[in-house]
Image (tube, rainbow, N blue to C red):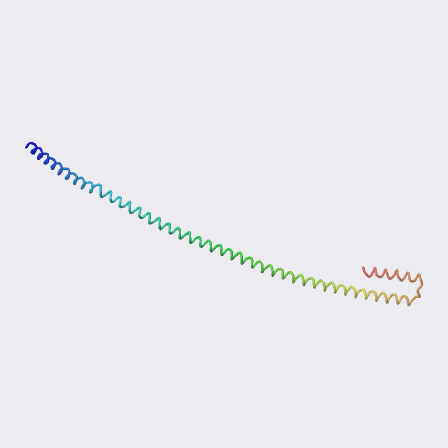
Length: 172
């Protein structure tokens, strides 16, 4: 009986302690839930939401950066093409202007050459006509002097000297 009474007492002690431990555990759990669990879970939820938002923002930022990079690359390519077209057009325009300038210069040079040839031909004709007139005048003078006197050797020398003097005076 002693064993039964010890067992009964130990069972009751054990059951009483067990009930105390359970009640204490439940109270402790309620206190933890009320004071610690809810703030910790709220903090964890907020942290998880912040991390999710940061990941979403990073993904959006990366997509935006990729789009901007693609756009800038396209604009750069477009700018390069425009620059190449501008250079090509400038070269074509320069070649056209160069050809026009060369053609104009050649025409001007040809016109100047023709004018110079005309002027030289006119000067030659004028000189020839002047020489013909001078020769004719001198011939008339010589003939008239010959008629006036009979030519002797001394007379011929004088006639030639006067003719030369007339040429010198006429050219001056």
